Length: 324
Image 1: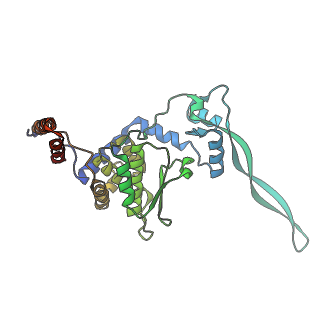
Image 2: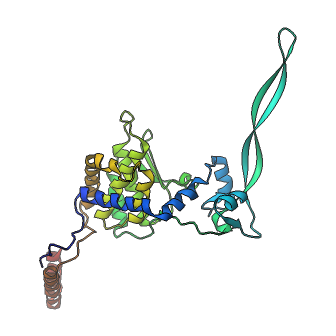
C-alpha cells in the first residue's frame, strides 16, 4: 500500500523528534494549567533535610505541604476540619543587642542577629479542600515489554554504578548523577516506564555533563538529558510526552526552545549510542504499523507454520527457526 501525499508520516529522525518535543513544550506555555502549576510550586519553600525527615516520619505519603495560612491565602484552599498538622521546625532571625566593654573602659552596644527555631505545623495537599490545582507533569505509570533486558543493557553500557537509593525518597528527584563518585542513583518504587525514562535521562547526564571543564548552564543540561530520554523512549515505544513536554517547558529560557536546535548534534549522538545498546541482541520493541501487504505476508507465514506443526515435532521446530 502506498501512502497518499497528504498522509502525515510519523517522525523518524532525531531532528524530527526534537521538533515534536519542542512543539509539545511550546503548547505547554499556552496552557492556563501551566500558569496554575507555576503558581503552585512557587508557594513551597525548600525544606531542610531535617524537616524533610520529620515530614517523612510523620507521613511518608506526603506530596506537597504548606502552612495553614499559605493554603488559605495563596491557593484558596482550606485545611479540612480535624486534620492534624505535620510538625516541623521553623527557623527565624532575632535581633539582639549586647554591651561590650571596650579597652578604654567605655561600654559599646553591639547589634547581632541570632537564629532561632520554633515548632510549626504544615499540612499536606490531601488534607485540604478548595480550588483545584492542576498539575501538568504526569508521572509515567506503564509497564515496558522486556523491561529487565532493557534495564540490564542500559546499565551495562555505562561505567557508572547504577543503584536504587532510599536517599531519593525524601526529595522530589527521581534520579541523580554523581560524576565524582561515578554513580547514578534512582528512586525505588517507580513504574517501569518512569524507571527506564529516568535511567536514560541520567545516563545522558553521565555522557554529556560529567566533565567539569565543560561548563554548561543547568537549563541546557536538563534540556539535553530529557530530550535524549524522549528520543530513546520513542524508539522503545514508550510515550513520555505528558512528562517530557512540561519538563522541557519548565527548563526552557524561551518559548521557542532554541537551545534544542543548538544541542542537536550532542543529543543525536547520545541518543544513537543508547538506541544501539538496547537494539543489540534484543528484538526491536517499537514497530511501525503493518501495511496491508505486510499483514497478508504475515498471515501466510503464520499459516505455513501451522501446517508444519501438523506434520510433526521436527518440522514444527524447523518452521519456528525460519520465522525468527
